[in-house]
Length: 280
View 1: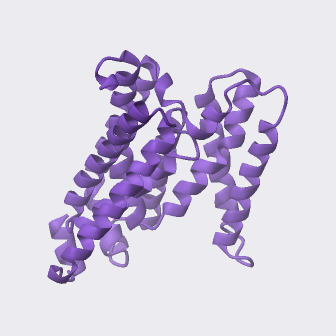
View 2: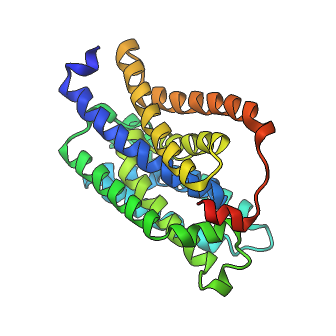
């Protein structure tokens, strides 16, 4: 296999395993908290920041961070538009930002290789990218471990959470902050169009198979890493787009998990919130 003899592919392999595991575990909480739309919104709406950073010649990570910050603020204001509904307001905000990014991308001053902003450049992984991915994984792991009980309480019993000293709003805000961090760290490798696949597909697959929350988290991390490895190997062997191959691998694993989960469904029984918390 070519991947065993290429330093370029080996660095890409390490990068995607780290990103896949981190994004997979975080995605479980995003789906439980029904924040999948927020993940897609932040991933797509950072495009203007990326393009402006490319035009200005500044680090793309700074542009990505600025794009996420501005989008988050706009979404927060748009969500207050009760007359049209928060979902519609957020959708308008996100599509406007993405449209603005597309218009900026057509500028003749945009450097060659803009497609890397959309679909990523995993094969261009360098030392700094590996450091950023490793730091992301550590931050997400520590944050999820420290807040596990509060997160589980908000997911399984949000009504009782405030009386037990846990604010659902603050917990959701913390998860969204981790989401923004994950997107910023992963966007250069996976692109702002494909990072969403690793945030949602592995988590959805794990939730179709595993019952306990801890099992879902571990399984989602494994599926995320496995999808990255499978996609990278297929890309190298068939000489096809790396980011798209990884996204398709993640979706394929979800389809497989859905089939397994459907076969297991008759044996499942519903659990109360208290039982779910004990099993988390």
